[in-house]
Image (cartoon, rainbow, N blue to C red):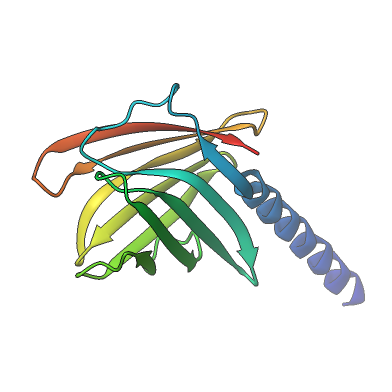
Length: 157
């Protein structure tokens, strides 16, 4: 019985370390490299993204500019479990925003952004093998109804 408890404890430790290692690839401060990115001119851009652990959740803080060049700030706290969690955004939106994400493998995550309960964009985040670059590919429809696909290349600071 004791050997079984020890084996279970060791197995759980390995699972925890594997999950922590996978999330660790995302952690840190990421700066947008506009020269390597392909961005829609009708959208704003997140110039700096900070991803950190907060308890057993992740927190993503975005600072950037909107399509008019005015500063923006948003925060999201949740899990990468495919469920929607609210996004706080400044300037405040007239409709609630949410973000959901799920892990595909140790370097790839899929996500969906919703605005007013409807999908506004979705895509993938992929961390390079060396952990220094994060490429986010997102597709959606802008506020004027135009479809877009952005390829955002971020470098770890």
